[in-house]
Amino acid sequence: MEELRDFSQGIIPFLERYIENIKMMHQLLNTNLLTSEEKNKAFYEIKEVDLILKEILNKIKNIILEMAQDSIIQESNREYYTFFKDEPNTNKINFIILALYYDKLKEFYIINLEKLETIKKLLLPKISQQTLFYQQFFDYQMKTCYIKLQKIQKLLKQFEILLHYNKNEKNKKISEQIKYSPGIEYRYSLVFREDLNEYVKNFFSNEEPAKPTKENEKLKDLIRTNTQIIKKEIDKSPKNQYINKNILDTSGRFLWNSSMYYYLSYDFNKLNLEEKCFINVFYIDTHLGANPQIVRSQIVRTLIRKEKILSKEEAINQYKKFLDSLFELNQQIILLNFRIPEEDKKLFLYHLGPLVFFNMNKQYLVDLQTGSIHQIVNPEKNLIRKVIPFEFIKKFLFDWWIEHILNHLSDEEKNNYSKYQKLILHIQKIVYNIQLDFKRQYPEEEIHYTNTKFIEFLKNKIGSMNLLLIQRYLNIFKHIKVT
Image 1 (cartoon, rainbow, N blue to C red):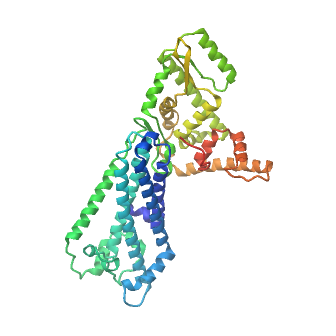
Image 2 (image 1 turned 60 degrees about the horizontal axis):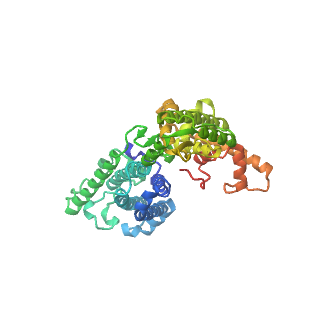
Image 3 (image 1 turned 180 degrees about the vertical axis):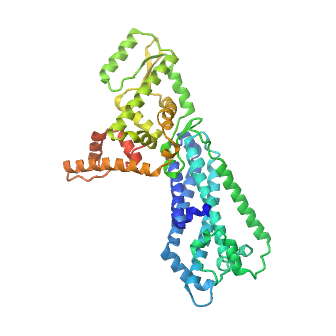
């Protein structure tokens, strides 16, 4: 059955993939995707959600341990006489194993559905829908959890058919709710049969169909309601477009290319304040590597001469041209430093993501002391303000990223995992060679990403801003903050 394909390698691999979504939700709570204002507003709710997510993670880990082959076989042997009164045989043991799978998975399904609903009730009233956190936490991670729970629900229904589950016996033990047939050779693969219902019915053809009870109807209502909740969550997925108000969404179709790195967002309020900084501008740092002392002298001379103040439009256009040059330069630096083949350049930058590309440019501006707008605040006293408009830069990057990166790649290329893996291996090889160089020069030193000597060596080899690239592609340098 196509809808159960995700379970073809077993239930445990599916639950391990579900864990990744819960882990990501937990990580998102502790990132700076939430503003200080939002964190303060939802302080107690965030703490409670943090505990709920930890509880879910522990529950999944326990279920995975219980479902491991050795554990489940031991439990089925212990529970044998709860299910049967005669001597054990392999087929009956297999029947019990399937029953235990069903029981544990059903508990998992009900608990997770309830916990996700609790999380929604706690956080939704406190978090703006216009934030990147909302899109990552609710529209992607939580939505994916609901989709996976819906798949679990379908698997549970197949188990119920195979185990000849009697919903009218809802309040009894699992051993009293199901029925064994010696004619069926019980094995996990049976749940994938298209004709499972007809197949099992043949072995219980003499039985009268169970009459629906009030309890059974309540259970049906619960499942129906849960399905509606899931469908509602699925329907809430964002439109298939790159820009959604203040969020750039470049994510792909899969979990591996839908992480936070594929998104970028700016703050409306901060952007409005920054745009006011383009009024009464007398100088803009547009150098890409000049001597800071020379630059300071130019600023002073310009201010003393009281040369023409730029109009807001002139200042914005000049700054946009500077950003075009900056992005182009850093794009070339990145591609040259990491020796990316011509045919992979756009894909490499796509998977680097707009978030990391922005942070690398931000690092460049700070290191080279450039990109500042110099605004006259008080002409009489020659009071000036100096600011780098980071939210403005993010907004400008939206269109630049679409024009220079996204428009050059097909949907197939962006979702090709083997090409993505190839890029990771390429970076790993470069870092490995740097490690060898370090070991040759400092044989007594350990190669570790908390070793300051190694970090300095790496910075000298590739530049400080490229540490962010390595952190993104190889998931190391956890202590480096990606904002």
